[in-house]
Image (tube, rainbow, N blue to C red; front, top):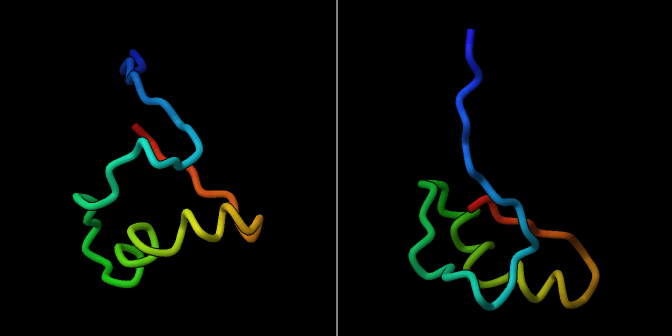
Length: 52
């Protein structure tokens, strides 16, 4: 059995990430990542990471 080689990167969310096009189908999560996540990170309330 071989393990597939995926080239993913996990990094903290930043203004470089285009959140406008994000859609996972869960309205509350879509809203949070587009409008609230970065503010919560700045306030040290949470740590948000993205998988690229």
